[in-house]
Image (cartoon, one colour):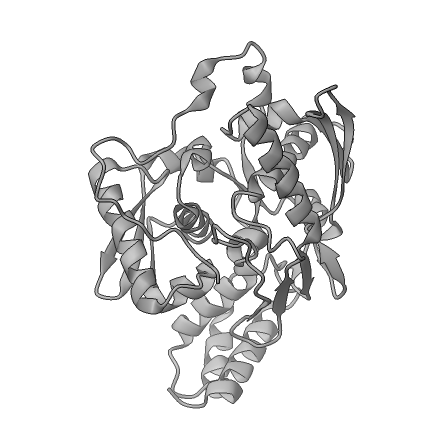
Amino acid sequence: MVCEITKDGGLPARSPLLPDRQEQGDFFVCDIFDAAPKGDMASMAHPIFSLSTKPDHRIRRYEDESGQNYLEVKPSVDGLATIHDRDVLIYCISQIMAALNEGQKISQTIRLKAYDMLKATNRMTDGRGYEGLRAALVRLQGTQIETNIVTGGQEQLDLFSIIDRARIVRETREGRMQEIEIELSDWVFNAIQAQEVLTLHRNYFRLRKPLERRLYELARKHCGRKSEWRVSLAVLQRKCGSASTPREFRRLVANIVRQDEAHNHIPDYAIRLDEGYVMFFKRQTVAALVEAEPPSEVAQIRLKPATYELAREAAPGWDIYQLEQEWRSWMADGGLDAPKDADRAFQGFCRKWYEKRGRP
């Protein structure tokens, strides 16, 4: 049975964040952190990683509102990759993006020091840290994805793993890994080359609960340059990939909201709950992140006035501006490029929306 973290234990007087292990201070840590943490937008938008604290063997399938794009995640015998395993992916993406920004030649295969990764992702560097890293590599390679969601202008229709291969290049005499070679999947590497990535707050690695990390990812993905993002609990649960009952999911979110009200511990965004809706409000700390990122092609689309009239004919009874938001979110969530003919694409979206749902 899949088990998510559910124990509240009351609200602690101290911050819910994990200790900042970087404060231990190694002379080369500054070099590690020259690469700002970054996550790819496609896996931030979709619940690929498990929130479970035990091996999760569920097969997940998700479809977007149009029914055209799907994503199916299949675990190995070791279970799905967890949201804490995602730290490995974030570290690799961050290193490659830093090299890309410096004009260096990048490769789909990256070699790194295990100790550097553990330190940069705020993990313990004792034996448990190395064992956890090895287990994460196994789950990342074993978790398979089938999707037709576009990254970097290319559509993947085959079955692939999150990482294609992981190889321990050097080990100490005690068997502790020193260097690792990781080959990223085409899907992830295409997203990096197209710069479909978002910068994350460093305190992301200090969030204790898997659900806290997932909520932050979604807020970072959907809030963007907006001051707030509002989403129903039902939709939020689907986006999180939570296996809890709706009642239990509400309780878990409510507990995180209470802790955030007391400690402001969620990076970049304040989280509040109001009558079945969860609201994310942008803090001042996120301003520098979004200002440094150029608006996406999707955000810059401007539709012709006549297009709205044709869209009303395609979806009679529906609020066209609401459908426009759904259309833009659908493209942004999937990391899709702006269509060559945006006006015709929006009309087609409205037509299919009406065919699927009829009148409101």
